[in-house]
Image 1: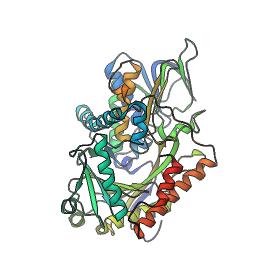
Image 2: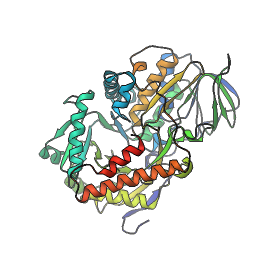
Image 3: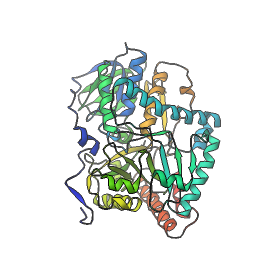
Image 4: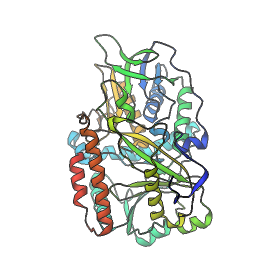
Length: 473
């Protein structure tokens, strides 16, 4: 590691995530003992799979439900993310509105507002202590171009269901009083956000779901998902036997490319994080952040951060965004240059923390559809369903997906099943090497745009517009 970065004596890189370092890796549940039949089989033991099982079992306790997980429940993005329980939803609002109209997209946004509180309420009801604190969310602009985007973004949200109480620009004095970000020109604030410790939520939710009678099989690799043939059952093919079910739900998010026939379905985008040691009161005196709000800057290659329950700063960003051939990390180990990049961003935003030592670095993957829009779907004819493509906004969206899949499986016509992300079909990503080349170019352009805007730009760089065009966002 770079000698210019202060590290604790027990600094670690990988080991899944710092969140699991705090609480310890969970004991493994038994693997699938052989072929089995279920009403619903869920492939993937992250938030999507756990929430879907939770709401299905709650609605119909008699359902036979299995979760099939390659590692342990919460091993993927659910136990590695930035701890952002926010109402932000991935993808273009205009693109979603094309499906069922503008009001349907507004309804979707309001459903996300409610989903933040739904997660908080379930955690309270089920006794899941996940360090949840609903302090809201800051977006901060640190150059004139970012400020123009920030103001335009807040104005645009007024047409998509955001009232003044849902998102507003902060006066400079109020922003400085609440959070001291170096170079901040302006900030916006939304109350619809909460800090969480994501591994605690994943482990707690898995405990609750297992206690409801859902079979969670870990160390069970699913290699293929097969649709129903005629009057037969859909199937999840594992290395330990075939699981047959009326419905097989794919909840694999960033690991979807590992399934047969799904290699180009969702791109596994890499995201990395670092976390400091606990910071002393004299440092926090200069930073503020007493409300423990979530924080994101308004750059193109953005960073996101939280103040943890034990007074650390955890900050993340894209780093190396994509590995050739849709490969994923090895138990969370991230690259040295990514750690250095995140450290520079941390010091840039919070100079008072420049002497704080880093204690942990890690990474994980998230699922990105070709049009960057999340989706949830169930086909009764084939018995197959899925949800994902959250593009980094999955902590809250998974809960909405779980409740929506419940209604779809139970054939309920509800306001959730009418939301515009239900049933969306998205074309696949390009084959390699076009996929790798395209993603590298996109993020090279975004970084170039950020450099130009930091140096002299007062409007959004043309590099960013080109990147948006290539990415299809």
